[in-house]
Image (cartoon, rainbow, N blue to C red; front, side, top):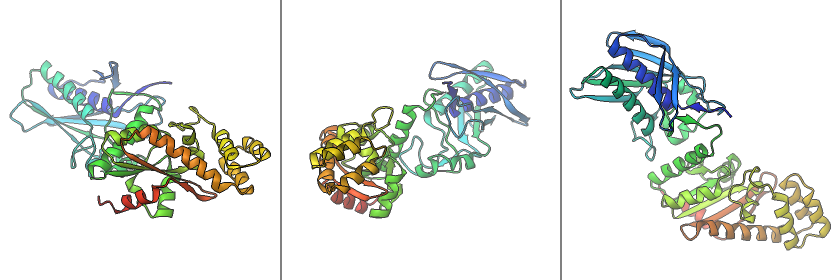
Length: 369
């Protein structure tokens, strides 16, 4: 799959080009920068504008084969002469770049959502131009993304407390298509933000169904829960590293029955043995041999559970499933934090919970933030 370049790389390239045009008086159509990941980004410049004491230009974000919402948008840098008496580079966000409103993110509250690596990239590239022209004053760089406020509504930014636009991101400067690392970093950011707000306990769910179930069944505020996708084990590890004392996992039987087999990444490409694990639990619970055969032929966990219900073994079945889920969650937590679990389906509702789940849910609800 084709790789691309981050909004941070685009911002750094645009800033370098604008600085060059401001200090040289000459127009450029392309610029090269070195990314932290070691690749050279040869960027084409668009929307070049020159005015008294400032120059702006843009770079079109190409995320490669990654379906990022910012692909195709223009990242613009406007460079002007600053008021500082000492040599330096001032960096801020303009139209379409978000502002941080909650603690726990890469930048402090009130700052533009331009993360630390892109800031360092921008400063390095602009200083390189300043060195070429022996400029000893201050240059001011304002990064903007036209239409960024609309794009941001399709991202996690409103949930994170970044308002008014998109973030300027990137750690290597390179976009890896469908990167697991990007998903894991999103989970880490949400957990870190909860911790920065003072939370010592956290609820996680693999997807929207789990978050909605918690709201409908337990009146739990969705903004306080973290969506962990398929990365249940990684989320537990992160929560422990960040100093949480307890974690509540809430999810659909179709995902969490895999945890009863010790599977901590529940993506179907990693492991898809839902009906096999359900068949094993059904046999333990007293379901007939014919019922087990039918379970193994099911294509959904709801259909398989319906067979268990039909034989009147649902209580024993869920007791076994929850006992195994609890065993493997506690094994992963390894004493670093307490962990509880709630399992449901949209068809059957609440199916099971570990012994301490209700108590933890109460503590979560009562914990002030």
